Image (cartoon, rainbow, N blue to C red; front, side, top):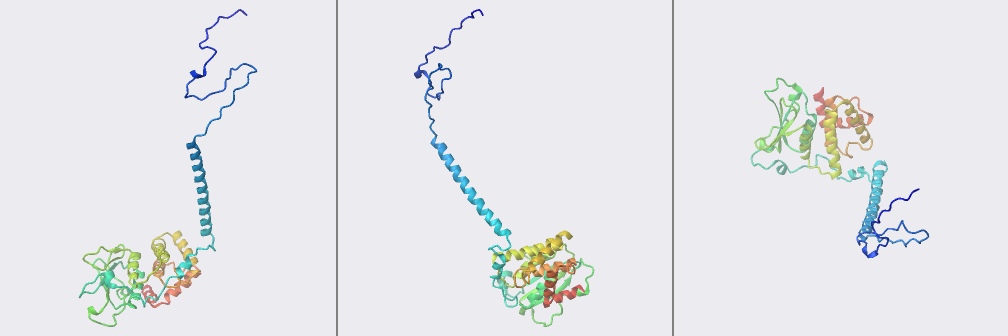
Length: 317
């Protein structure tokens, strides 16, 4: 092969170390002569901030693992039937007392007005009587001296005779100021029951469940947070699923009621509460009482053995 032309080298073969930039890291020489020993490896120093970051990451992972173990333990406790935390134990610690022996401060709840009777006024549609309110009215009559009255609004053409006499006859005629509470029911064409106890200044309370909550509070019953939450939950379930829900929702509610009543005689604990009144009313209004499961049937009979429920039952015949 003929000789090729030569190219002048761009750098000298000897590169002094002091000419190298200080900002670069050294690399082994790949072009060293054969048989020449490789230069010693330069050990890189670990950045302290990187070490701190790794330690922090390990600590976070350790804490996450501990939290996961705690959550797993809680989930097993909740899903296990014989869990240590049992809500029924908390319910049983409530100090229940008969409704007829307790009472709220009516002046505190309804306002104090000298010379005027505190009067609760309820508008309801006769096409769907609010049975729970009628039951609570009977219960209130066992605790307070109540002046009861029933009227018919001009928006309603006709009202069945039994609804006009839903409060029965006022047995004792006394001066108005001797009563503790007035209870006036007006049959009116309204979409939902409405209640006022201060006609001039108060916005109406709407809905059978909300009115029932207010009226039941006049008994002065006090519950712990767990019991109060369960009662409210059953009231909402009875109104929105049992009374206004689909057939599938009603079936699910009846199964839940059957399970709850298998553990206690009433829906929440061992005493009658607002949950029982509203749920019983919803069953009667929807006509599902006859097809209810065994425990629910037994509970219905327990309700109707009480005078306030049995008197309302006469209105359905």
